Length: 264
Length: 299
Image (cartoon, rainbow over all chains, first blue to last red; front, side):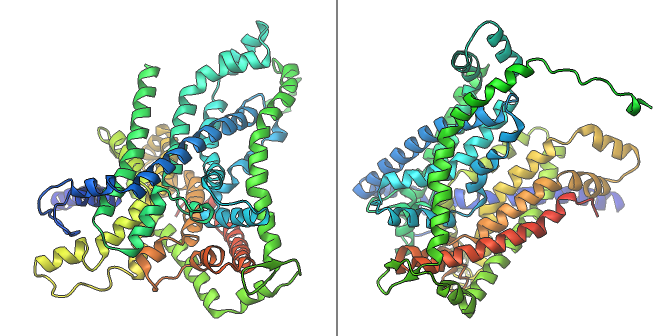
């Protein structure tokens, strides 16, 4: 009896963990499954499989525009954040950095400690103050502020583990600061920077809270899902949401594969 | 005895060069400084200034300083109630996430062998599957013709759709918990992975049960990360304005909804700005309270 009870207790934690993962993944599984539903409903089990919602979504020019816009914004954000964030990580996190500069790191990560609504509100005030027309450029500005902390945290963790002896050896061999950076430091930390840049792209691809404030006439994929979801119950949103989600997951997955292989 | 012996500080190798790394380092920091100043600090200052400006009838603002916006926020029972609801949702979601996260993270880090990397992968998948996508999915699952109601109707278990599934406080709470869990799971598993296994073994060798190891060693050692995770969830949930609109209907108005309306639709920027700064003050005070748990020594 007691052994049975003990065995039941031992199963309690794994069962709970399984339940939590089911809860975590439920919305994702639901959207992907429903996107293949032949029937015009949200119910499971599916009434036959079909690609009709994908055909409908891909034939929609507003979806294609949003897709291109999201892609432009994500690439621009990733590129800008990678350059700006790498500089910040190199200057603040190296063991050679003077201690007095370390508090500046708090400044770089501060936007992440704030809900998007504050960043969005502050930016819209800036843009109205200086009469900047809202466009994809203003969206990119918001995304850069939002994603920089995440890039910085990943990049600075890598830089702070960097073996300074390598850099000092290069210095002793006569390499100046620029040569040391380009020939020694960057080649070693590039895989991490690349991974962080892809994460930034994915964050930008999914960003809604700030975009809602800073976007003008254009649309991005999250904005399109929002406006469709608010107005209608339309199974084609499942296909749109699945495409949005799978694009960023595949991009992240592929990068990790490439990096893993390059490190081997 | 050893402490009384003073040795001359050895001069670290390369100390002279280290000083020279300064100006070049600052040059690399310059782009980040410009970005953060121009697009974060200056906008926040402008937002603060705006909260003291006078709003006209048609969305225009004038430079006459006034406290009218703050007075309107503090006097309004609706704003007070909405703000309080947001803080309740933030705190409740953060508490629930921590209660779920600790046992799950413990299991992933210390009990799982083969599936540990799969578990971490699935958490990341959940994290990167998209904020709006997940909220939309909960809306679709909980709706009157959605997954739960539709399936229950088909099975004949219910005859009318259950109205409380969508557009309820529960729906908002479930969705916000679902959005927040991957963050707390990643932060706390990360903190637990840094724990030295020797520490746990020592505790066990000294006769501590699994439960006592958990409450007296694992929880205190990870309390710093727990405080960050808790505060992060508290703040992002209290500031969420999308979830209440998509799955809450009119039942769970969180403070983000009036803020976003003031900026995006109504165009009364001083009013919106004043709500923002009231919330920021509350968040700051909350942080001072929550931080006390950083030195948590176990139950």
